[in-house]
Length: 75
Image (cartoon, rainbow, N blue to C red; front, side, top):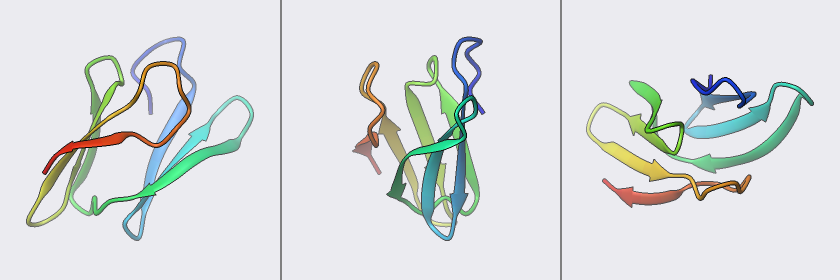
């Protein structure tokens, strides 16, 4: 879930796909593929997402004020 007070969204991962849901409207905003079997963590005011599996960590960055899948920054 978002750590920011004015953000109402939830990120959940199922079978290697991350889904972003709006908690107010209950709609799916977007989804994208990434392995995150070990952990999924938001930080930097919910602008960055760290997805981890047993062998890799991937850093994704969200574009400001856009409800689109994030850009992969590094593995």
